[in-house]
Length: 223
Ligand SMILES: C[S@@+](CC[C@H](N)C(=O)[O-])C[C@H]1O[C@@H](n2cnc3c(N)ncnc32)[C@H](O)[C@@H]1O
Image (cartoon, rainbow, N blue to C red; front, side, top):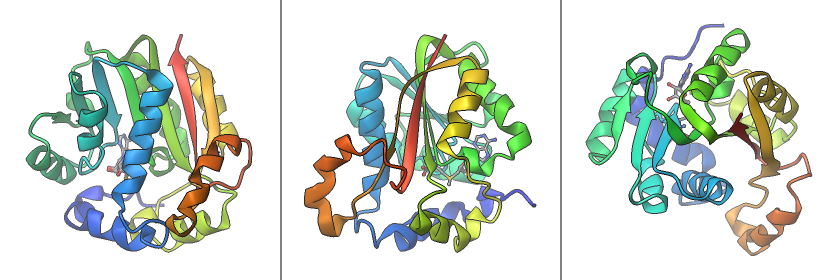
């Protein structure tokens, strides 16, 4: 399977996401906002935040709002995505993974919909990369598509930039995180209710056990 080069989608990534997820929520920033807010709940305060696989930097304004005084860094192998990320977020810093200072340590790393683009044979190295860049006690929070949700699977199967996607179950993500040196602190399925039934969204807090959410999260703490 050929790995997708996100350089070719950088200029239209935002529009593609909006077209794909508009049925769930008209404001497509809903997803990044949701994930950053959840990450803040799970970690508390943070002085240094890493968005691993940040793409065009869509999460950055929400990180800035959640962690106003933190140093916020994005890293992504797509140089063209980073050009857009830098233009739109001058108060954050962006690097390709190779260029990220290996001595820098973060309190929180978020990886949102990144690991299904990393071939299974390379996932452990990527997890260790995140592990080694966290302070002891720092959190890695992974959000991934839920392979048990048929709507999610349909969206992935019909999305051009998901042609290289190999979805991970929550169990695989947890196992890999443990093997990379993380203690699992919290996990659950999420993103159950579209905007049309937004009144039901508070119920999500009671449904994290139900493997029907559109995505799931796993929060691990560096040992
Ligand atoms: C679907 S996009 C998600 C972007 C962003 N996290 C978001 O939620 O909008 C997947 C991103 O993962 C990046 N990616 C792919 N392989 C990666 C790797 N080995 N390390 C870090 N990022 C990677 C891609 O370049 C792309 O920007």
